[in-house]
Length: 261
Ligand code: UP6
Image 1 (cartoon, rainbow, N blue to C red):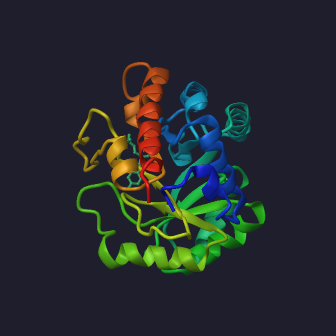
Image 2: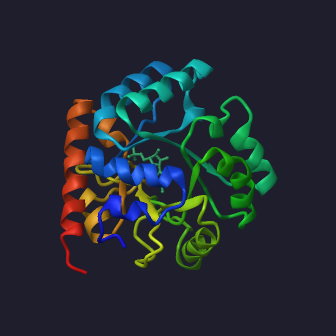
Image 3: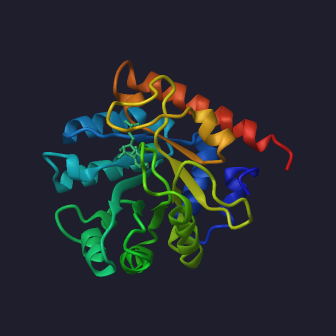
């Protein structure tokens, strides 16, 4: 369960990317993911290098990069090896199985060839997971399902959210967890929860985003990885911001595993 250490939970996972992630989080003492939503290759690489020592996951939106090229991928992979983090392409696939299979493997970005983790909406039904799995499983990739969203008025609630859990349970070898705001299960099955909408200062952004603190997310809601975007690169010193979020996220985790079940 989530009251155990990340490392001891790794054994619950048959998926190589999930195991690697849980082990590196304890080793690097970080449950912070930096979401670097910038539009040029140079900015993405600079910020990824600055954040590298403090994060377990680098989250990208590769389709917003205006000057994307294959060298960007080469350099991202080199940074992931240098700093030991995983790359999560926040693609939010949302089409039928056959189409997402092509979107994941092909096109300009060839996401499956470099992103350890990606994610998908469940709006099309379970076929989306099967389509992505055909590409991702042979490459040892991992998938997160969007069970909930951080934005105001999100329609991913109630039964929709619980259906994400059902689908994940049926596809455990590939589907290692969720994007969501709270843990949906507390059993031994042990999914990984990554949570965006995290801010220490801002409460929102005027476009529907809603922020909660690292402690609310990790200690109170039982989630595993805090995803922070503008709180890290949106102002002030990037490395210093990383330090603050990493400390807040890590303290909330230590507080959580100290709770006696
Ligand atoms: N994201 C959310 N909420 C969700 C799912 N994904 O904000 O429910 C993503 C956004 C963005 C990042 O696409 O990349 O997480 C949040 O960035 P921010 O911290 O700058 O608000």
